[in-house]
Image (cartoon, rainbow, N blue to C red):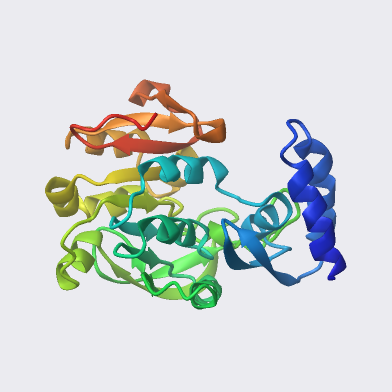
Length: 291
């Protein structure tokens, strides 16, 4: 057996013990120094290629998941037959998790503009024969066309490469040009592809969350999807708006909010209660947060 895979078997098991993450972090950070990829065979019963030296990939490899809290909330919302949009798909952690729960009649459309990530994402979809997952190599905003994408040449504070930091709003360390990408809007995609319903949208696009929602107002009014959105002050400011504007826009369409906490616990959230960073569940009109 691959020694790295064998060691992973230990760390993912030990990770279940509360408080062990602090000790295990030294292992994760040690192995992020050398570029290498592995296919893990036990991510939610699916196969997933990850980069052990990359931020998200290293968490999935050593701990079993990266977006654990978000996945736990999704598990309580998703049902067979649902139509899901994953905006900022990365390597497919959320998309494959969702696909397993909405199959066989559901659908997951995964938008990922970074060519390097989209390549791995397509491989992961093919590896699992996930025919209901469509990969769209495109960015989402409030207009269609093209735009430059920016990334960072610096390693993240934990020593990893962080491929998920690419943004439309280059500033500071995230000002390294990564090429031009194609843009579309959620409303335009749904109209062009004649989607009959949209039940869940996850948005994590490093500052483009508000533009993405502005380009989805038709879908919000027509379908009232559940929304899971990364809301943070730093990326919002770089994009030229205040993070509270995301909630204010959705409030105009009847949404209420919950902060997603550890183990997927939900706590009511208001504009005044926003912190520097949080994952937010936006609850559609007439719905209640999942227990």
